[in-house]
Length: 140
Image (cartoon, rainbow, N blue to C red):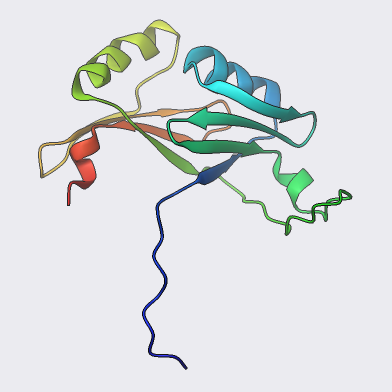
């Protein structure tokens, strides 16, 4: 076993959520939230740009079987609701708090964290927990 330190990590490049209904996911993330769709493969996935990273939405059953493509991505998938957090400026968080209910999306929770940062939580059409949080939430 080596005693060398782990190589550096720059940050998160992509994160994945799972949804059986890609059209509903695309309506929510692209239509309601305004994310730019980068790629869609019917029955398998829809990908969105989220700031400097990517939000990948996969149909879980489709990613649990080996791909028949030249690029062999390992099988993956999840069951049950996942979680994704968008970083938003404090003024924008206040706007999201008004905007989302105006689009028929219920705010499930509002939290002011011990460090003073605030978050709101909603559910996407697949039941995933989607958080909008001020960047100071993880101030280090």
